[in-house]
Length: 317
Figure 1 (cartoon, rainbow, N blue to C red):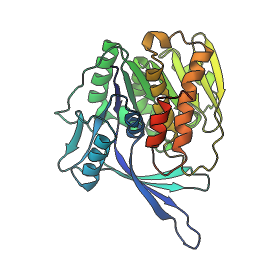
Figure 2: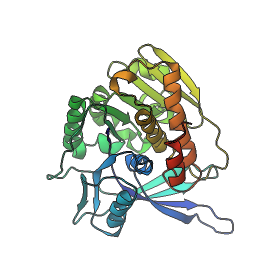
Figure 3: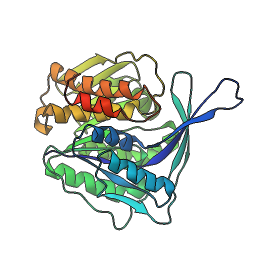
């Protein structure tokens, strides 16, 4: 069977919200997180074969994170628990719309000398992104993994997730970003990412000027706004569904990725078929993506519910 591999950081998200009668925001939940981590937990809940490449510290947070992966059906054969390293923590402050601002407490990501490379097969899916995929400390592991997956004929899905806090590092990181573009089958980013990187929120402009010469397939999301897919044959616009009773948007983008990948697997779309998808084909994939993203907004978890994950594999959205 095809396998999904996610590669990225792990972090414990502590969520805060203003509570009436309290002078400061109060903690309302603590959940394991990390962009690709969130995605693979949702994928694991669907029952699809998946694994996670990453690491955490050998402390209470790290042990809980490892156990959480296993209980959600994610293989930890390539996941490290490092002695002497502290697990990462983030404080996420939710506003009235469920949108978060972050404060991070973590060490700079770095590859370990003894990391292990999984085997890849044609049409497997590899999800990677965020600062983890471009920082100097992780480049040896990330580059080697992407090269091996690309050589095997896997689909490489790159989610930029480029935060404003790293904007001052952009000149030094661009070479790694472009390398990732070049190896990718699909590049996904948000209008917020491209406003920071290229001072533009226009998906077609970003594709034409910055993406197309590296990667032929591009998805740009804009929160609850228009989703734009750009390909060499043309572009497609899709409207994101309105979500009532939003609790938190922390995992929305990560679960968009999870849903898209589940759609690829569920519909039997491989690397060759992706290159020739028509409007209807992209629309089916985007429906999976937005269904996952919408469901993740309904709780303080960073992932879809187990009930939703079971149902979505039986009934196409």
